[in-house]
Length: 420
Ligand SMILES: [Mg+2]
Image (tube, rainbow, N blue to C red):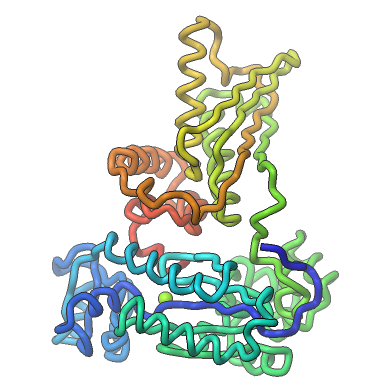
């Protein structure tokens, strides 16, 4: 995707498609007799089961995500509890992306039920973006499923398009332009903006920025000082049509590297392994954000003596998973140590280590059957549980929340998909 990312851009050419009550709608699509009824999708349907997705009808009756089933049944006695079918939702996701790709080559899946359709390079093709949104809704009903509804936001950048998609549910269509943005922001709290958590909100409030409108009007210099990083400037750009800071450009990366300098206190085998895992997860996140898989990797260590260890590998199949990268590196290190009967590669003299991935291919050209291999999935799951124990749930969820690899979704649990 080529686009001039940091030119002022005020034309609403980016569409954000958010499927409404996606899991529940998939169930209602498959089973005609569930349509029009309040449905709750749960991981298990025991008394204390937890609602992970409520149908549009159930939401209208007050059923909320994360409610316990006994609470939900008390509010809505004719609620139909259903167990999840992750494979089913993946199939619908694939169908959805196929439909969206008819409208633009620049389609970026953001989660199982959301995608950006960037029409910035199609301004000569589509004269009226609202009309395109209507056509997309129609195509979804015709070719994904006649019970599938979505809310579409249209704006000059991906962030505002997502925000616009939240304005009206279900079946919404909202456009944000320089003329309408203040009206959209006015009723919102800081934490209503995707990406602003409680901690960030407190930091902003302490600096006199209380609302999204205040945030929009704050100067980039002030925001940079408040956030103590480039993040502040990005908020200025997003809310003032300064260009695109959320859509990674697929081309332009020949390699990505993650490097770590090791301090003396970190030179224990456990800590070094954790650091290596976090490097791999960092690369995973960057590859996911950029929509690429890598076909080769190198791992290098530098020791206090200036000695180095270096290892390069080409993968038989493209890889995006951090744990998989980590597994390959660990296996190679173990083999190396065994064969050469040398000291551990990760030893107390380590000064820095670096993982580099290269030979990228776009995620959407990676055959889907890669995900169907259950032995691989199981292995991944196992690695993830190990990681989860090491890092704690939070960290793992953050590093994998944007992943498009379905294998992770089963592991992290559907409660988290809500946050994507
Ligand atoms: Mg949704």
